[in-house]
Image (cartoon, rainbow, N blue to C red):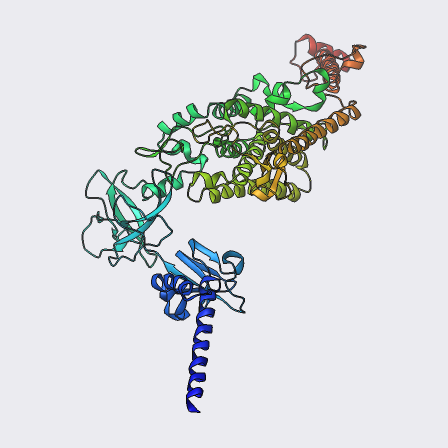
Length: 623
């Protein structure tokens, strides 16, 4: 009777083992196995290749980098889950949200964590690591490992670490009167001098924040002590392009961006003539004054940008426009020896290049003309008799065109196609600077109790006009050296929304703003742009008709449309006042002449004896 019992217990153990094996197989492979061969084939690879990744506890494998909902900081691989169930690894370069939305839910549980498996970048010269990684810690306080982003010949993003002088200087305590010239070494003595006349003295800081001084050969590391990658990122802003290698870089910018630099020269020349050659009276001939439009002086719509009320106004506009040089194109500059500023499609794409997304010289001139005219016309709605000067409308107009280009660049995912490190974030920074300009202009208008609402309305109208021009005309992006087509921002509508279900609708041309989900058909976007521009012009024309009685106050140069009448009616108040003053002066002169004649004929009681006047006085006394 005991033998059957032992058979039953053995059979139970076999059933339990088989059930546990099936459960383990389902957890590891996501499917049931019906045979021992299938079980071995499914289970063996996972356990042979990565036994610790699934079977060990959380604390034994990887590095904890956050619980569910936290931001996991990691350079390498990250997985999400708990205990025996984990998601597939994701490659992370910086941080990622520890959530099922990012990784997928490997098994429904209340709380999960993220684990980081960091990767160390290569330190060998000429090689790089093809996945996000972090640099090792240097044991030498004077040196440190700096991470830099590179590109392989086929455009793949990779990372490497290079040894460089520590950013924080190591103070050297000695009695020498010369500054140290070793990398990373500095002196706390401000009076120290460079031993070599070819070296330049530079300021550093120690780890505790103290100022110290060092010497290095002129031109080594740049004036700011940067390496080539850092220097290139510093020069990425178009505002600084003319100063990269001054004065050579200035001429290169003038040659590469002729339209915008010529516009800047006209602004400077107009200001000089306006303030230092007053007899030209440019204020009368070039200022925009809406009542003068009644006499056909339409050139004023395009000339008022050359005049500025003061030097501060001019300098602000010049800096604003210099920061929009990339709207025309990227000049042939080098950020360092042999490293061009402009990215090219044929050559290797460096991590420090600037993609040419400009619209070219012709379209830039067209944008300037459109925003000048549109801003001036819409500004008359608020005050028809305002005298307008300055290039602020152009500043906001090119900002609007840049926003449109950047938005379509990011919406089409061109930054991911180019694989330029963090260039999408750089575009967002540029958009943030433009938004700051807009906010400052609006705040100034509000703080001025509405006194500058005319200028604000013209500025915002120019911003919209620049944006609408790009949408309406769809100019080419770049000079063809970077993209395969002239309009790479035009994508198929099927990439923007799942509502395009048929082949015909999915291949319709669309443009997306900032991200693919904000797509819009090209025809629809152009109709909206035409409606906005046409509506502004129509309202301005109606406003001009209603306010046609406002006089030009003698500012107009032409006499077209005037009806000559009696002289007294056409004379201005100033001329009438001048005539009145001349009459008063003539009357005063006649009175003075009469008084002088009476004074000359009046006898003097104190005349000398023997003179005729004394005899006449004696005769009067006797009488």
